Image: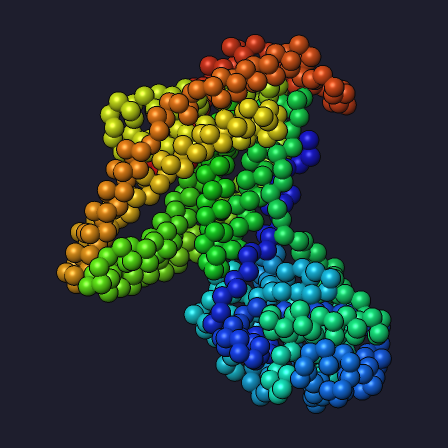
Length: 623
């Protein structure tokens, strides 16, 4: 089985932040006449990038075919004109950290002098589709001191600080461009620009020089479809080819620096001959990659889903480390605890994300007199969120987090244990035992929850269901069919229990605010409105609990019986065939060893109980 975590060596691209109002695009463009969609500044650049062998045919094209409103190409868009602009010379500098923090996260930072002032620009490295790029582009004016004085709250400064922390920015590229451009105007309103760029890129300590000749057609999003025929004719008539690399990427290639593309979590690649150690490492490799893949988006904070997915990845890894603890190296115990620390920091921000997202719906529930009172709560939650975000960034910039990531990489690069007997057992023989133990825990939690009716016991049931679901999902495609269907059924119960917990958590959080230091500064009207919201959340939790179907029917029942039958049948096949099922050919390596399950079941169970207890002590809401 190949080494598992080379993906951790590359931080992948984060998600784009397509939010208006975060900075102007290169062009100060507006939307279609009568369309209000373009009245706000946009931070999304939409641009065709086309490579040219020679720019002179393009210049002749605009002289002979692109001038005058009577030309057929221009007539396809009523009122479209091409307006020549003076030739300009652009001097750009590109920056990154010594460990390529921005580039590996999928972003590029540039400074440029424009109209007598310096400006910083941050773009993402979203790949083109047939030469057309849609990507984040935000700008921010620079003082004479340059990047050292980037506004930490500005559209560029905020993002750069989140991505690089305290690391120093160094210049990595010099780019000089001679630009001849044509404005695209419709009845006097700018809708795009065609730039003919003759560019020289200087990179690396050896000052490698690369020359590019490129045509860039930037338009506002609303005009992409209308102007596509113009771009297609230009491309065809002048022999242009879609550019696969941005100028920054071309410069990095010239310097011999390979930053890699966006890393995506690898699939859990296991077969009927896989050992339990190989399965454990495949599962951990996937979720470790997912954690790192969402780090950039988590740092930026523009899409709360990135943080949620990063947190889910840490939870799944903790569950896997607990489930497979007996077949993992000793360092796994330490990594389990450190992932608990990270999950806690992420969870604080996640909880506030949810509360801020729910604030609007809470406000709508109240009568008019109480709605305005909740504005003060919104301000308080926003302040708490900013503090939690600052603590999260400090954690991600810490040596502790670096040690966690490097520790995962080292462990997974080493691969499954070779000397441990348990690690070399056939996965199909051991999995029914592992999944069965998780099921027994959920079964006990079901009986207790229905006996007591306490919300705390239903929360405990939710945790047990999540562990059971993860244990089944970790098997990849070893079973399929009935086993996967049962996992979906458990997930349905888990989701319903989660809604109950969300409602109760909201009520508890509001009570904590009202009775804490923050509540002392709130107007009494706000505290009263918070009490009304909290009471409704308690009623919501009770109503959902009353409507909850009998959980034992979902945890046990016919689907569980069929899942057990499927797992036992596969175990029997594995024992009889030495790890190889019917229809499969033997693999080159020795099949996983078959041993009586009783020989390792007890040690596995003891080790897992210790790990589970430690996990709940660190974070009772885990995994």
